[in-house]
Image (cartoon, rainbow, N blue to C red; front, side):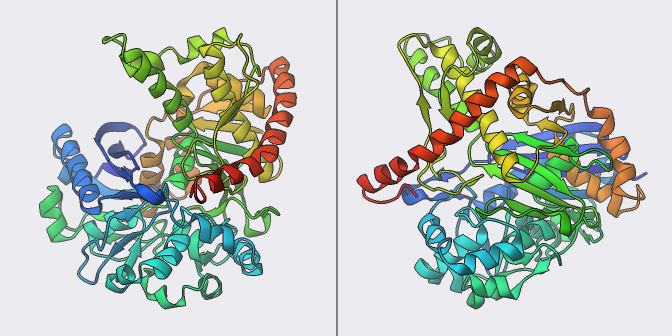
Length: 520
């Protein structure tokens, strides 16, 4: 009996293969670290072949855990980290290491392009702001500075597309990434006008066909079957980008309520839903993304700030480095376990923190490759717990900043990501946003969202509406009400937060120039 679906979620730092029952129960997880290199000049790269080998390792890990998995496997669906550029040649080999979404080499080109009228037209068609992490910007940079790389290339993939190719030998991308980079969100297809506006006519042939995993699939090849230990001909579904799949698995798609979804991960992703193309709201600053959802007529509208829990990681790692010099027994995990304790010791809105710790600057709700993190309001009375709480408050302020750029705040927000397990963090986010917070018990929401696409595609469910009844709703906790007193405190602090980022922007620019050019 074919009663198992595997969802692959190929993240920047971890690749996971997750086995689910047809009713959405998580049966097993196999995970392998995924490594990347940070190089000079804003380069952030990942080894394409190693990413594939690590994915193979996760699939073999599931075979070891689940009896008769190859015979029971109904389908595999793949999602993965978004943006970036994964180039292969005509023989299917990688041309160079993958350029990741963290890569900022195209930052100056993006800034120049944003000043011309062509960017406004491009934004109106794609519904997506232009920034250095996108494949369009990276191909533009490669075309100007490394044309020899593109001359060797036959296809430009994203991460999940590369893995789909390895399993099926089909060169394709999905509507979510294909459209927000080069397409028209209304038609869910490439737009030649956008490609021409970007000046990328010469590399148009690199863009693979768009395959919609909501309705189409291909088969596991014989060579991939031998490598994976799975059965040749197993259906393979190309999922949408990880952000869309995670939001789907965590509860964004709600046919009744106006629900948002915030992913508190390495980056902060804040997502609303439009029920038609006409309902998509485009902002004057030309930021954010419009992504197709694997539901007819529906769109995810989102703003994404470059660094969310990366800010917490930075603070904890810095302390761990110092403490480790004096206490050999101190472990990083021990410090993370104390985050709620420290936040409870501090007064709210005591310090303002700007959470722009990424080397690539910020992309939502404003684009500035020079943006950098900072504390405002420090005094001699403040201690480490004050810093911890202010960092988490900064993440929540960034979330509100992003939601407001998309229009009105939703009625409720589903939080997902490892940090959402923190009681204090959830309370801070709910109080800053002023809306009820729900949290999904679904630990692998991205892989689940991808698997849900396969479940509907292959006919195990009539529609996504019926699928979420089994796969999503049972895992959503009760709505946590807003602390109104804390909300009033944070309303004033949020005004100061926005004023501070507007005021300090010229300083970021000046500092970048002082060190011999832009940070990006």
